[in-house]
Image (cartoon, protein in one colour):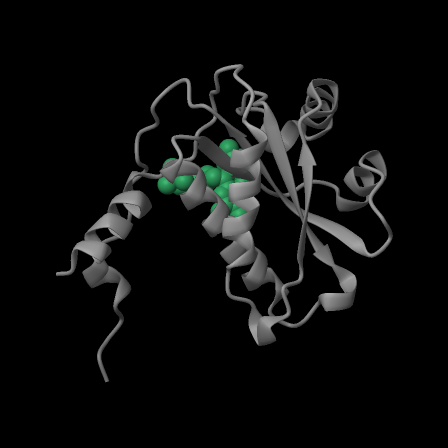
Length: 169
Ligand SMILES: Cc1cc2nc3c(=O)[nH]c(=O)nc-3n(C[C@H](O)[C@H](O)[C@H](O)COP(=O)(O)O)c2cc1C
């Protein structure tokens, strides 16, 4: 198999959800690189419905952790929180998938740069929107916490390829 596939698979397989971080700040250049990776994600009809809020203020990250108790309880406050938002004017039937593609690009590129990251979902959108003072046309849909990893994480088990392929028709 091609070495490009091997190199890509290494990044895909070695990426983990990281929930413990060192306190070191992330250079602005690296933050830009994460968003650069996101913007090249595929989207239905090339709608590019994503916009990002970069949160580096320690107090704001702490406040967000305090209000997202359900989803952030087991996650340490990292130096960077990215809020993936949907621009309502660019929404299509496929927006949820598009955001997932942008998420994966950010997670994989973070790992490739030696950063650790974890997606955070399932919070009160209206409350968070107000807290972050988001413009009316932006809906927060997912957060990603990012930082330099403080602890390696074990890979949770994956279902096997043979179990996933239902049949060949
Ligand atoms: C959309 C989405 C939302 C997630 N939300 C959370 C979350 O709120 N809290 C958390 O600890 N992990 C969250 N995760 C991380 C998953 O638990 C993790 O991806 C899964 O257990 C597989 O582990 P791995 O990422 O290390 O391969 C989320 C992942 C995705 C894709």
